[in-house]
Length: 216
Image (cartoon, rainbow, N blue to C red):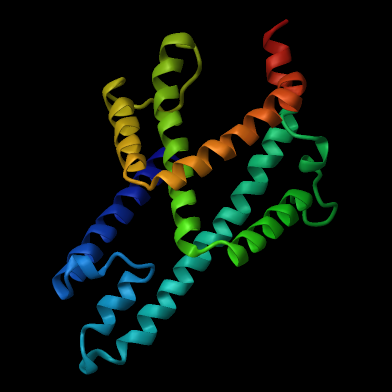
């Protein structure tokens, strides 16, 4: 699994770099700070490449759709795992009798996503997703260093090499990218984290099975 993940990330990174090189070779980078940079590049290629426009744009829509579906599948299962530990109410870990999926979490996630997508501008949604993802990555990187010191006996099928250099570099890169985001996005992140802390200390802290077992 780790080899597959690292391999897919490597391929994706190379493809993104190649696309960026092609786009900046077609148009100036100053015109690509939009929600559809690929479409801008294709449109600038002239009438001779008119046939390519619908293909590229349909592919871009298909790519976005696949990302949305993956996130809509992943978030309910995170809620499921949190509920099984007691961090969330038991309703989040209910599994459908026929489809064997966490149906309540899936429906709730879909409804929230629909409302947010219909109300908020795509620029704000993109910034919120970016800062949330980068913060999660930074926390994971720091956690590697902490767990190596506090829990060295844990069985690790995959070990991050060159610790603490790689985790610290990963956290630093994430924080630098977060720093480039607007102040409004940081304020929204702080509010969202405050809501999470309230839920944790009001409910999750007392109900966490992992915490209760470790404290015995």
